[in-house]
Image 1 (cartoon, rainbow, N blue to C red):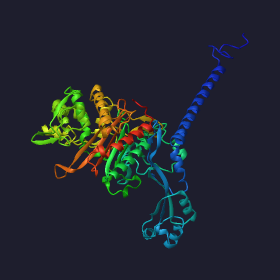
Image 2: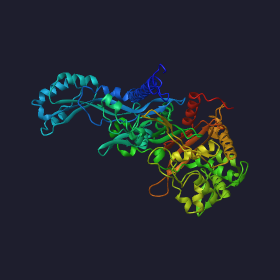
Image 3: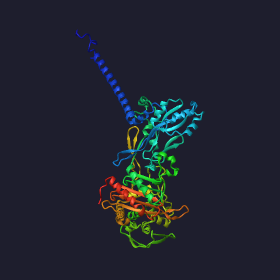
Image 4: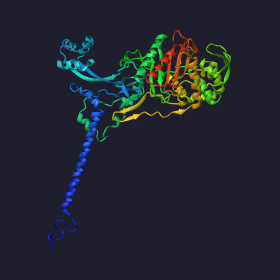
Length: 594
């Protein structure tokens, strides 16, 4: 008999079964399984810790200061808005949150209001006595706020007093570090019934991204780590939508534009105007300023809601002669004219029984297309429209989007008013050819003029570049609906003509830059009277230009309303435009192109 024992027993077993080996293998499997579980659990914990400490770390650090104050449910929270540096990186905050403390009292628990006022006024600067005693007298009200937005040092001093019936609560509010800078573009946060929400500007348009749902400043750290794991490792549905906004706006450019506008308005004794700096190839807006402006930190003191509306997006104007380069482009693009065509200028003409004339009424005889731009001749624009044909002219105007919204990411955009062209009356088309009788928003005309600069493409103007989501991801905001509206060859021809205008005609060529080509055009339009017709002595002055002309990085648009002491925009806006162009060329280091 084998020393190992009978079959089925001992180490090997009947079928070669090794019991000891089986148990060892099973133990190894269990150990590996438990190791995987521990590893996954550790990974889950580390990931959640990363989310809490890194992704939301800033919010929790801000909340840490509230550990000794009374609980505040649903404390106000909101994402930040950032400017963008000229190299494309995220810049400083344009809108953020600021923290402070509210001091409240329970009038029922205060036996001696005068003594309490004496104690509190010693540590709270500028505590209003009349308001305090009014609130302290409301014995049926258990909660009355007597001071708000106090610094931590004051809250600490109040706490040390240890007075019964006095509460210290943390509060947070929307804060705009640059006061009036880009106010119309940013908007502000205000009351919307029982809640706070974005009002006007980026604050309103991206309210769904910036707002925070039920943000509690006293959330438990470990509760946050393990909360809602059944929904997602990193975030729930609300958090997936929440984030910060990075703008395309460059603060130095924004500030320069605002200063240039302020100087021009002072010089020409008027209060209304605006400007835009845009990349005509991409639609990125580097600056947008309007006057009069307001401080979003104190919007309640700004004199009424009318100042909050952004006239560059929400108001329509008859733009005048800056439309003429587009009329020239329509004629060239359709084949109705060439840059070397001529017409006979009689100074005035009759259209539909009405007299239309050049700005000075003078006849110029045989005149070339270049002079239509150089001398801003209304009859030349009418001639091109007539050669192009009303139907074709209207089709180009519609293709440039003048009767619709541009799609800019700002609220309350107004579509253009092209109703006059629907009448098909000759006079309406004649006046439209030089920018009267049709009304468009500044942003719409900037988009249309950008097509001249970028080779004939209609782009979407925008002020937001990307969203930095609360969960840690980033999304570039795509604007991919660009479409061709003019032939590239057409825009190159018109650009050459506009460069000639600057080099030879604009203030007789004195402002041209020898090493940089600039394509530009002025505009002067009569302001419509509410009684019908037009004012004889009130005008809108406008100016646009792009540079370097044949590969432009910037298009600048300026306008002022009812300037005093000057008849034409060449007098009021040439220098502000040229100063802006020189600033941008130097600030961005734009190389010479000639």
